Length: 434
Ligand code: AMP
Image (cartoon, rainbow, N blue to C red; front, side, top):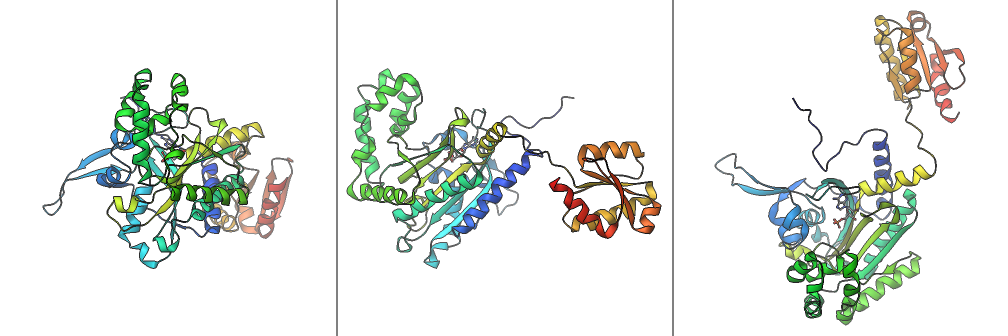
């Protein structure tokens, strides 16, 4: 029988790497809490229509990357339904915002999420079919200030703070404005006209995009196409005064806060729902898939999926890529210390197993990391296992269990001593600093 493996584009995350994932999530939670965001958890699968309407039929995600299936009815009362594993989380959050009438509080909903997303992309370094995103959204009625450029700047400043606190150095922030839903069709027409005489010289993908979604031409990475793209009209020249003013205010607030950024005229991003501000943080250490995170404003998304007017702004970070960046940085500095237990408890004989479990319970409740051996092991085997997994070994025989005086050997120094159980936790905690 062939052995079963994790499916292409998916992977297992093992310790000690999972400790890094936890650290990233802890920093995200801590930073987001200071900006007064709360956590939302939406379902992993949703009605396919949510993404078709919310992300856009013409996007790569919806047209070719979704995991969609017809879910059979289980009862007469149920209908067969088209369901999809979420390829992103913004549409789900906005659906929840509408479903739970969060706008009725009159305040901004400030929500963050951490979780897996699914896209059938060609797997490569930094690009997987199951990947994790950490994202946040600020959504609300206009009178709550949801359209204010200050919200955009605050979200960008929060991201800069997050990356700094996480210790990621050398990131670049690019921002642009794709205008309002009125500006965009105007620009797309301008673009179509400008593309018509040159598109035959471009790559096949661009030729297709020029037909279906001309904005996507700006994303093309083929070197031969770049001079043509650089000469195309810029979206900034198609913005109306309100959009231009909005963008100028985002920039002014960023300037005042000292967050460095560049204005990238070609940043239009892959999702149809963006309006006005779009942004991306990239990192040179990531290679071809260099986007750490992306986001933008989506003033019409709620209405597109049947909700009230509720402008919003949000972002999604690729957690897998944050991990890759930190691993590369840490490899350049010093190797992360391996995870070691504070001690290994070796029961000397099966009769001591219950006492060993009780001792492990006491120490663990005192905050220590404890590996528990087994009374059937010979002493040599216990020592070998302890040496691989822990800083010290505690021997628990019948005498020790009765007297409460334990034998402890510390591997770093090779010293062996008798220690009353009441002093054990302090002694073991002290070893962490040696
Ligand atoms: P998007 O939802 O496409 O705007 O992507 C936001 C961020 O999610 C990107 O900047 C990446 O960091 C990450 N991301 C998107 N797709 C993938 C993928 N297939 N594998 C890993 N990370 C991804």
